[in-house]
Image 1 (cartoon, rainbow, N blue to C red):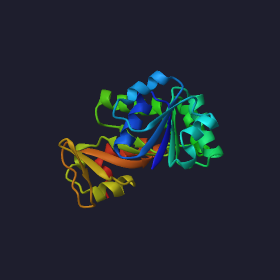
Image 2: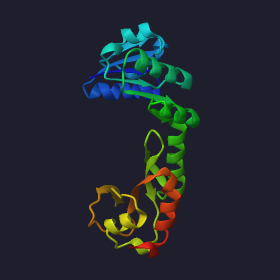
Image 3: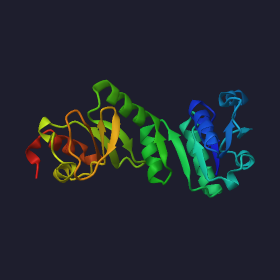
Image 4: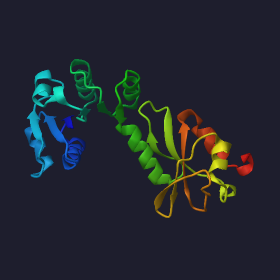
Length: 220
C-alpha cells in the first residue's frame, strides 16, 4: 500500500518510519528539506520538498495511487487544506488530519474529514496520569460521540460477573486491566479487586454510568 504524509515533524517522521517498517510505500512532504533528517538512514520511502496542499507536489508524491493521506504538519489550516485537496481533488477517501483546536476538529469531523484533536487527546491522557486510572478516556471516536473509558467503581461490584455490570449500566464492558495486562471479557468474567474497568459508553452518558458504578445497589 502507498501512503502520502504531509509534514515531517516528530509525528510525521515517526508515522513514516512506522509505515516503512511494515513494508508499505511511503512519500513524505515537507517545505523544509532539513526536516527529512528525522527519517534516518534506513528510511526507504521518498521525500518531496514543498507544501502538502499543492496539487503538483501531491502528484509528485504519488497521491493518485495513494491508499491513504495523513496531514500532520504544524498548522491546522494547512492540515485541513491538504486533507481537502487530497480527498476532493484526488478522490482519496482514507484521509486523516491532525488538528490542535478541538472546536475546529468537531466542525471538520461533521464535514466527513476524520481528525486527531491533539489537545483533546493530550488533555485526556495527562488527566488520567494525574488522577490515576479512574475516569480516563482511553479512546474516543472521531465524532466524539462514543468513548472507551476507564471508570472507577464501588467495592460492591467486586465478585460480580461482567454481564451483570453491563446490564446495570446499559453499556458494554469489553476489557479489564488486571495485574498490569489486558483481558478481553466474556459475560461470565468476574470482576476482581483492583481490576481496571473499561466501558464503551456514549459520551453524554459518562457521568450517568460513573454514578451507577459508584453504587452497587443498581445491580439487577
